[in-house]
Length: 535
Image (tube, rainbow, N blue to C red):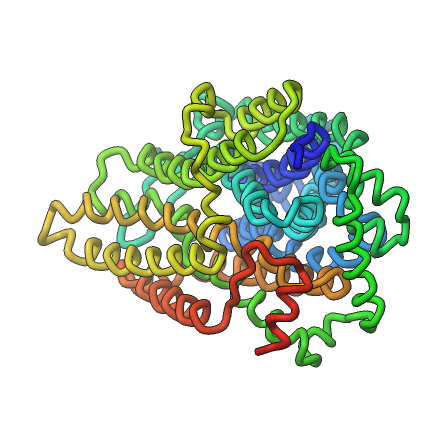
């Protein structure tokens, strides 16, 4: 099968939305002090006195946490939006997100009398798009990808997210805080990543530009979207537009004869027409859907309750406790590890394409250039990778990689706890704790990072898939919100032993995956459904 320029462009345009998604997860922390100053100035203007500390903390917490709340709410719109506009609405929706962010940036340039009206809009802009992005992007990529590369391409969503976080995530200087017994005084550096560095866009004058950087991928999406076809599976099964579906398949595959693919979709449509319309409640009531739904939920929880967000959010305090002299740059190193392990998978994907696909000169150049854009890494030596290497997920399978990731993270959490507990009596334990953090992040990108995002799309056929995506996304965002709100309190209570909680959760998810999660590698949607019926 030829890897056409249209196919590469469609995937790239979709994951550009994931890049913005990851960027906006981290970027809100950059202007924290400036936003708090705006809140205080508004309070003084209205009430004639400084804002109470507790109120200021609550307002800032809401400004950050509302992203997760928005994900919880808008994730239920995934099914409706995908059936109304099609699953290619993923890049379209992220284009709208970009417009919201542009509006937020422009709001910082409004006259003073308009700014108060715009602050609520900034919060709304953080609410609306979050859940749609997490559900629609992997759905669209999974539907247009061939079965042999469906899992491989699913990792691009996670890659773009971690790349966006690496580019944007920042905690500003001067925030007093206490975690793991480390007190941060004004003037101390907290976690920073690339664009949020004071030397770049984290300064007092440039922070509005930091919020508006997403104008670049937004313009790219607006330019590329007209050239991206709608999902042929959606056109044929949902819209009953056989001619348009066939034309989309030809554009995506470069083949004149797409009868075999159309026959597969015809069979899926025939079976779907035999099913009643599936609602969210029926996903739990019907024995046919209950087991894959429970698996999907627990896979999403295994990602958010693994402790990875706690590692990134409090990594500098952990490195400080471990005695690292430059904890800020050690934190950046953790972000680089997070991104690099996903990049390795994409390099193998490109190697597989270079071997197995018939690439025209133009589409080959497009593949390489897109890899450069998404990862900001040179790939001059990409052809030097052994072309016999198969892509990791398609070789080992989703289930195996997920268990390796969970098991490795569990072991790293235990080692990290022991190292932090023994640090005062054994100084060289600081190196062990650092190594365990980097290994923890690496194992996350092996399994729990990329796999749950697209696993749901493989466990359900076209009929129940949108509802299943909505439920899984809601659970993912809820767990994200719980960890973000509760971790600091639990960490202050438990000290370095807090990661034993995550170790216990990881062990539970590992056992569950071993006994209950099926392998979906190389299987069609109907074959996966048949496996559940035989259980």
